[in-house]
Image 1 (cartoon, chains in turn blue, purple):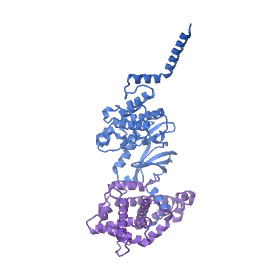
Image 2: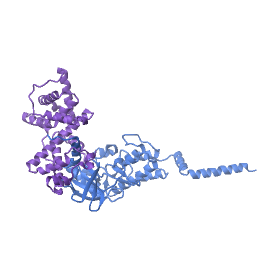
Image 3: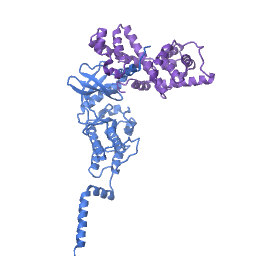
Image 4: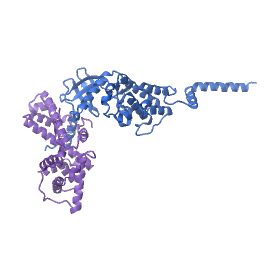
Length: 307
Length: 245
């Protein structure tokens, strides 16, 4: 048997899954991340002289037709969704070794779960509403993501967000065909999705509720209790209602409620009683109330001092 | 399709009622596991080289006779973990029964080159992982990769493509670590081309083809010794990391 040194072992483990050359156009530079069905590499597009990200089907999945068709579907879904919050696809193809790949814009930045900690609440909420935008856009084009979670959101240097990993996204037109196949991440998955039932955009509303939970509590819904302002907790609970009919009707309604909280307005998820309304009113108009109160006090003092 | 469509499971073979099939399965299993077992006995159980050689033969012989592996359930553990637990139990029982492990007296089931294994052990003694479970795993990886390399060599020799393997050997199988590689000590496409009388274009093509053949052989070997597709996928993902460490 051939003797293999430790260095040779390390190298073989690295190169065995390394993509075969992709013609003359793309030069694979380094691996960036690994998902369930493929690895994303940083690559150079020699033709256009720019850096790109190249997602390649894992060698392990070579004889897995379902994995190949998912990667293909992911590329198609991404290509059909032109939105600043969704990474654009430039090219698709097959490597010399038969593996599918697609080329997309290279975006580097921390994931939401790495970025959100220690950020002020208002900033976390603004990030949340930005995440809702591309998801709502996809829904409008009949695409349900089905695996929304903080790890699948990247935050750019200017606070822009990119929703990634559309590998299990579903065209709602084919929902019944796909219904029996349970895909996604348990902590963020809607109950109907866990049960293998057909899903619609409200499954993503549920997952977004999970992301909001993460942004409020600093951990996934199954790892830490909900915390934060009562109105935000109510938004989160409504988004994560077990029955789809009890959730927000769509992502825009969820996002609008978060926006209402940011604007100091009452939220749809939590009807206020008179005291809460008064407190919120006082908070919102704090400056005016201070001025009016000061004015009344001043007038009273003047009236009292007057002969 | 890169993987062969049909591949008999070694684990199914070792549990076969047909003695010839069972023996064939065991030979394939022993080919992957004997070195990790021998080295593990030397490192964890501190057996002498002779004791470890005898215990390795005895363990596999007993496993055939007593159907050690019939109880393996792929939903509970990976096979390599199961085998290591069987090995620990075997050594413990032997020691209890006889005060020490029995020496010799058993017909060898396959001819194993323990001297080479001992030489390898000395060669990488300093790099032995402090955790014996990690050590066993690392040696299992070494054994599996080495067998796949042998398969590729045999495949190319049989096909009269020795140059393909030579390129793979020169570029990927040397013992230079990453630091030395990046410092320029590693062979380049050009240097290998010059050494073997090939064009640089041939070198890159041969290397890509040899790596593909290596991956195919490795996954074929791995699939055969896993208890099912879930175990295979988990092991393969851990084994092939595509440059991500």
